[in-house]
Length: 263
Image (cartoon, rainbow, N blue to C red; front, top):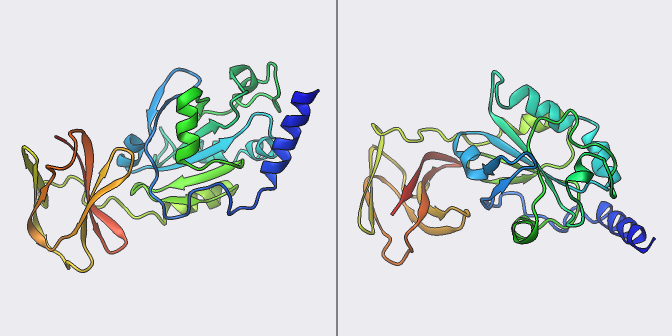
């Protein structure tokens, strides 16, 4: 009985928590993650973003009645089925991520435990039940302290706290995302590297007051930022550890070039 009472208190407290509490701010850069869904498939967030998709994250709990009501509105499942993989547009992706550490796969299928029902039936997008350190990391990175918490992440990795919208409202947000634009067009941009030096060349001229080169790590943390006017620019990475990074050239309100590098 004590466990059920604690669940009830937790659910009520989280359901009615102020909207400004426990979430990343709109405009934040989404931290990367690699997680395995309940079917055993592994997903890396930035792989989907780099493919030009707008990604929607649904943080929920199997025992949460408000989460269940939104799930049964089919807003996210319709979004995925109409605009996700194997559709004409194929420009969105959806993940559901379970928040509560006490819930397991039985709760997803509505078999036993504290659950509202079968969350898997009729749901084609990946559902994830992170545990241990993986759960702690993503909950911390995304500041999840209430549910359902719905984020929309544009291909440029910027987050919007979009909330429990209907399908058309969710998809309308994708149209507001800045396009990746001239990504990997070698005739316009080229990136070469020699040891800890990266050279960026462009056949275009830019306004250095409005155009910036940004280097981020795979978690989305910004490590270097400098203005860019086109032609040739060199980045000195001698103080940066070896690994995988992303170079972006950001113009006025949009990314005009993005490339993954490893050194």
